[in-house]
Image 1 (cartoon, rainbow, N blue to C red):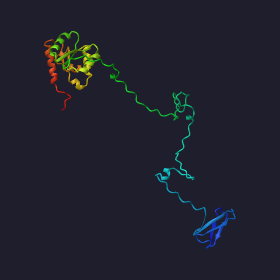
Image 2: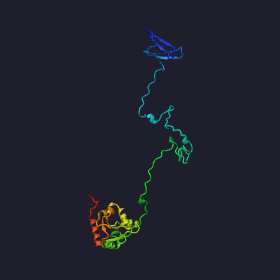
Image 3: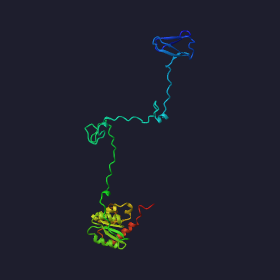
Image 4: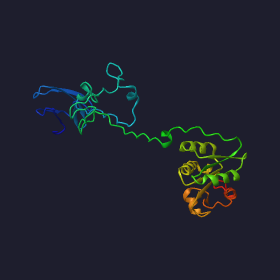
Length: 290
């Protein structure tokens, strides 16, 4: 600026126009042709000089927001007014997916390729991740065992006493059982030669008294009793005949019995059986409500 004149340099930098103080007035427009660049320049007079048209900074765009506006929800509208609702374009298929059978072909392919029988490589993610599955539970003994035979008949209304006596004891103690547990209120049933039949009889009839000795028949009978739930087992009187002193609590505990009778003592066996049953029935229940 010289004196009251205003210097207006051309944007090309090769020419400066000097204006009088009042030409053009503030806010007025004027134009000139630059002799250096040959361009026609139009400007607006301001208090500090001039501003060329086209050099004003564009308006700042609105600040972005976190929420999507109605336009983004409805879809972007192009210049022709059409709305694009197709969404993002699908990704181009990979080379693995373009060949037959890829990316997880059923036939085995060469090493390093995606196939059913080979790993495709440490960086190949074309195959879906394997989902671990829990192993099937092993079948239980109950599920794999053969079905039990039908239980043997017992007279209606009679209480059952089952015996598993070893050879040599069945004669004397068999008579004692018949005397202590006489019919028709009681019915005596010897353990069967087939352990499955003994198990079926115990589970179905739930005998009131069990009398067993050492031997296969007694072991099968005691094993069938041990398979019952605690509430059912408690209702039974399990008596063991053995070569131990009468009333040996430790021997009874080891055998899972309620009382032990000395098998070698043949004095009043029927009375001793009845007395052992009475003592067992006098014991309180472990499952009674307190």
